[in-house]
Amino acid sequence: MKETAVPDAIDLLKVRRSVKPREMAGPGPSPTELETILTIGARVPDHGKLTPWRFIIFEGDARGRAGEIIAQVFARKNPKATSAEVDVEKRRLTDAPLVIAVVSVTRPHPKVPPWEQELSAGASAMNIVTAATALGYGAAWLTGWFAFDRDVLDGLGLKPDEKLAGFVHIGTPTKPSEDRPRPSLADIVTRF
Image (tube, rainbow, N blue to C red):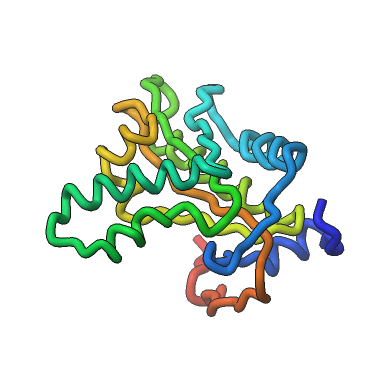
């Protein structure tokens, strides 16, 4: 675990915020910390015990290899793109030392509709973010055009029936993260 003081769970959840990947550096989680993060990512509501998600780890050179796939698809679909624009796509997963893709896969089930299974994948992504934050790392759950592009998904090894819930970028924050305005509870809470 990072050498920062670990807040209790409620305090952590009250102040958790995303850290931009460009504001992250190494080190990333150790192998033991990564196992902890993934274990917590798998501890989410999963009605029917369907395991409607899986994880793809991008670290080291794998981040650049994934970026090459993203850039190739981008260049093919945007033939007028400049080399600078293609280079931006190559670096999509290279800022943080670790990126975890949360893959959503729904299975036919008489009692668990696809929407509920997709929510389980989202809960998994959020648990990963929270676990990384609790260990002292910065984390951000992001998507982007490439998270919804079938050619990119195929290139990253997703099966035709799988979608991407998102990429969770994890690393050491390089500066304090600014909070964003949060909704007032009076604006979002009603009583029935």
